[in-house]
Amino acid sequence: MRSIMKNSSNKCLSFQKHLVVILQAFKLFVISAIFTDAIIKAAQSVPFIPQDAITIDCGSSRNNTAFDLRSWSGDVNSSFFPIQGRNEASFASAVVWSYTLEEDPVPYGTARLSHSEFTYTIPVSTPGPKFIRFHFYSDVYQYFDPSKAVFSVKVGRFTLLSNFSVFLSAHARGRKGIVKEFYVPIEKSIVNITFTPESSVSEAFVLINGIEVVSTPADLYFRDYNDGKHGHVLVGQDSFYYLENDTSLETMYRINIGGKEVTPAEDTGIFRRWERDNIYLTIPGQSLVAANFISPHKFTAIPDYIAPVSVYETARTMGNDKQMNKKYNLTWEFPVDSGFYYMLRLHFCEILAEINNTGDRCFLIFISNETAEQEADVIYWSGGKYVPYFRDYVIAMFGQNGENILNLSLALEANPDDSLTMYSDAILNGAEIFKLNNSGGSLAGPDSDLSPQVPQPTEQHVMQKHGRTTITVTFSGKDFGVLFLFIICLLILRACCKVRKMKNLSGSSEETICRDLFHSRTPVSKQSAGVSSLPSDLCRNFSLAEIPAATNNFEDNSIGVGGFGHEYKGKINGGVTMVAVKRLKPRSSQGVQRVQDRDQMNLATSYADCREEANEPSRVGPFLSSREKT
Ligand SMILES: *[C@@H]1O[C@H](CO)[C@@H](O)[C@H](O)[C@H]1NC(C)=O
Ligand SMILES: *[C@@H]1O[C@H](CO)[C@@H](O)[C@H](O)[C@H]1NC(C)=O
Ligand SMILES: *[C@@H]1O[C@H](CO)[C@@H](O)[C@H](O)[C@H]1NC(C)=O
Ligand SMILES: *[C@@H]1O[C@H](CO)[C@@H](O)[C@H](O)[C@H]1NC(C)=O
Ligand SMILES: *[C@@H]1O[C@H](CO)[C@@H](O)[C@H](O)[C@H]1NC(C)=O
Ligand SMILES: *[C@@H]1O[C@H](CO)[C@@H](O)[C@H](O)[C@H]1NC(C)=O
Ligand SMILES: *[C@@H]1O[C@H](CO)[C@@H](O)[C@H](O)[C@H]1NC(C)=O
Image (cartoon, rainbow, N blue to C red):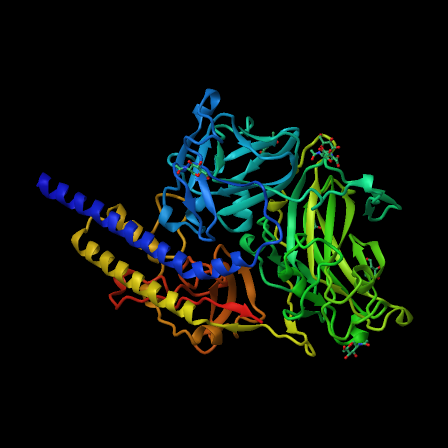
């Protein structure tokens, strides 16, 4: 009897090993599939190569490659993390249910945890401003209660985070993986990052999954006023604001207006992520998305590392109806913490064929209802068509009534005076919003992540009617290849699971892994992991053609962004059933295309979520990958 049990548990182990091998083989395959793309990208030299681009995979004992091919160094026994003194108190751990990771396992699959303070010591080649990014993944690690991950983070004189709860931040965003980005002037050739558990929370601990330190050009966000440059326009006050390199910034928002998400690997070499603007657009009016991917963009007015070309290739304009344009302000709103100054950088590039000269399109810009520009004229500023340009503004956000969260609004108004402009219209290509540290050197406020999300407007993504370019969605042959192999992999895995199921009736852990792999989301709680409550008759097969049909070709109905791509609203069963469709990001190597059940929207449900009990042939949802082409 005993020997039979032992035998069975050996089999379990060997099954787990097989699963891991297959998964890793799949990861390798996908990496090689996207490798060609990456090589091509790397060959197109990036505008800036940082001297320091340090990536630390916390809690890992070896060097790992992420899906975007960036290499991350494990911190166990590394020089970043001298094992001495108080640092011994911290230790490495992996996410308990690592097969259900919603994010890249590098760096999100492993973490460093500690009930007491510890410090990373990271040598850099030169002093100067650096991006410091923290990656957190809110999940179960050993016996730790995820809600107790509350701590502060300090770098030199600056408090970057204070009483920061990974769990609450992740919860507010509806995803487990979060990134906090800071821009910190570093005075020495060393960066000391100190993590301290929050003393006011019992059993608080520090949780950190990944750290990046990336150097940037010194003039990326700071100006050298010795050159006779004037300060930033201080909006709403008749003065300038001198933003100097004694101040740290926290990135609040970075938006590619009218365009797609730009991933860190597609940035100018400094690994910034640019989001889409949809969810922040509160008064879209008749606005149009303008795009011009063809004309060569000439960086004659600003350095080419300021923002990637893809930011300047797309924009939002007010519309083609002159009278309508005068009736509304094209408005975005961004929730921010009150009690701080904010720096806004607006990116412009004139990309419309009909606009050729100064005076053709002259408009107004308001920031928080204060006039920031009375005569915004992109061609006048930049010196020509297709020439990228940016303007910086600083605004004080101090609430009148003690609110913790304020809306920072950005509004464009068509010029009401026809004699001042040929076209009654406005244009914006990109925006970045940074919080500036207060006089005490702190960036920590009541966490604006915890505010309710800006509600989604009913927006029409109308393409520029007379535009020269339209965005088309195509499926390349290689994507189909990846799809095909992925399906084969999953079929093999499912077959394995079935065999296991028959052999093992006791419901042991590897069966759970098996299920986790095929079921969409796993609850944070360990006990309920892998238990799906979906009725098996909801399982359904979809053809590749059905998905674009159900979602109107992914137009007009994005309902959110997840770890692997955008989610779209769609209808199936002849329009009777509402579904959510997740579309993988271009080159995203992970993830099964799946429809998720969203209770709050009364949606049904998950076609890749078939259970073994369904007693049907294995079914896997179509795996769509698409890219936007010129
Ligand atoms: C990881 O890479 C770093 C350099 O990037 C190297 O110094 C270190 O020895 C590597 N560690 C391991 C375990 O291979
Ligand atoms: C700030 O800039 C000045 C010159 O513009 C430079 O000498 C100094 O080292 C810089 N400080 C930091 C922290 O980058
Ligand atoms: C930290 O935040 C928690 C809520 O997340 C709050 O209850 C607690 O009072 C805060 N502690 C301090 C010192 O602000
Ligand atoms: C700008 O130039 C294009 C062709 O180069 C022309 O079709 C268009 O009418 C011009 N627009 C104005 C306002 O002159
Ligand atoms: C646009 O916003 C400004 C500032 O809030 C306001 O004065 C102006 O009337 C608005 N214009 C329109 C057309 O709503
Ligand atoms: C911000 O604006 C949104 C939409 O206009 C609104 O729902 C929300 O209550 C505002 N938040 C604050 C703090 O004013
Ligand atoms: C940011 O903090 C530093 C260090 O405390 C301080 O010298 C600087 O003036 C602060 N910046 C602002 C804008 O208050």
